[in-house]
Length: 170
Image 1: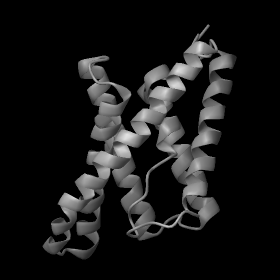
Image 2: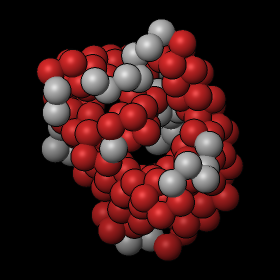
Image 3: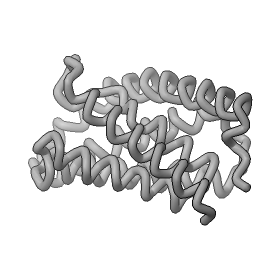
Image 4: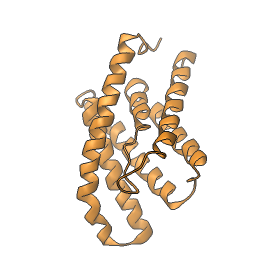
């Protein structure tokens, strides 16, 4: 990877981390529901640099953000990490198998739906209560809304990057 690309990935990682930490300060309708603003940088890394770069940005966001916010190592960290990795995996596979068939909005909705579903599955491993899955409709509805919003932000950022020549990976 060229130094310029590495620097850009560092900036994306920093943006992901700042947005992750900022989002912990925003009130949530339910304890596990948040927009996932840091994922804008993860999806940008995926679309511009590929799955490996997106995984690096995601792991930096998760690990450093959890250390900063004090959530590292707890059940919420484990559940969020499992869901984040599942989401990254799903979006990476969709990109690999379909190319650019899905817009950033569609890709983010898929990632958010997988994240919410994996989060419920991981939480079930902790508490072993099948009633937890009654939250699936609400979780998928929030995934649709948050995925669409994050996808629109990714689309907007890509347009700005193209207009300013930042997408040239020379």
